[in-house]
Image 1 (spheres, rainbow, N blue to C red):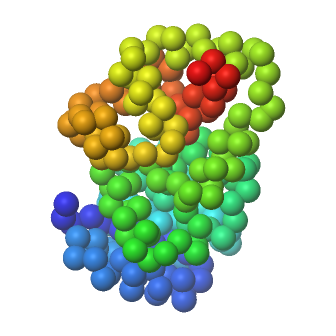
Image 2: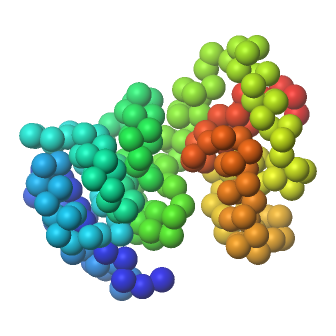
Length: 219
């Protein structure tokens, strides 16, 4: 892929400089703008029309969660990765509910950060492994009979192949990894993922994982 436009939003100038250096080393990523807080991000994103926004959470004037919500309300097509030192269950869930496409910790390795931006630009969600683990635990706890029944009922709508894809999504696999594992084309996997979303009445991969884990006793 080429020409992924990125805007970095963080109130710490050293963090912004570090992110610019990391992303600037990738030939296909272009940091086209920086913002010092969520309010500033409104103008920068409107002017630069980035593909991906790296958004800090704790900032003055307007924090990252409020900025994420505001950008989505304004119809921005930029995919937002929340990048923070905080990874509480509530914060992760709120970011995803507001429309964030990814949630990464600031100690993410530089190479992994570059990969994350590329994947999000392609339309795939991205969560730090530690965040994925605790998020699944949070949304599946406590497990009760009502939720288990609902999960099993929804999963019963899936074909055998769609269930395999759902299980793979739940394991945190990307579309490319699923294609390799199931010996399918990536385009075919994307079609199956879309069908899974429709049948389970969800909008993201974390929700798929929730239903798979809720119904785990049935497997």
